[in-house]
Length: 151
Image 1 (tube, rainbow, N blue to C red):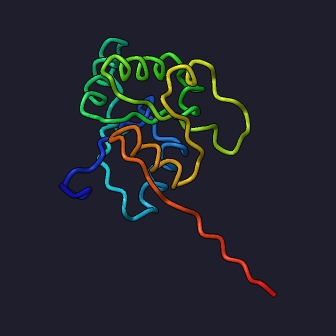
Image 2: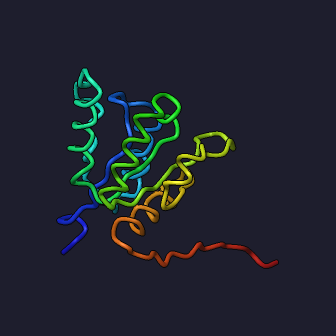
């Protein structure tokens, strides 16, 4: 089965609001041109009013995914909600890829580090490799090419 017909199903943490980091994840994934994914998260959906309805809606979004991407920026806005998403992912046996803080060297909150299976830097290659490793156990064997000139 090709990657196009069997895309990696991923969920990106949200609090029913798209933020810069949320959009940035998809910019990185689209930039490769060869990474096929299906986004199961729906931040644009109407936020359910009560806590239990919110949790039920998140469970519905997370259930079909193969891997969850955690954004520290969303954790800062809604820590309890992100912890719920991470704990549900763990209970459903879904791997978690946590993103580092964007544009900051500040360490990730302990709660995120403790639950994450892998932490990814903000670059297209690191993110895609982490998603492939965690979702499908695919090891990438890419090498960096360094060109230099001898005088």
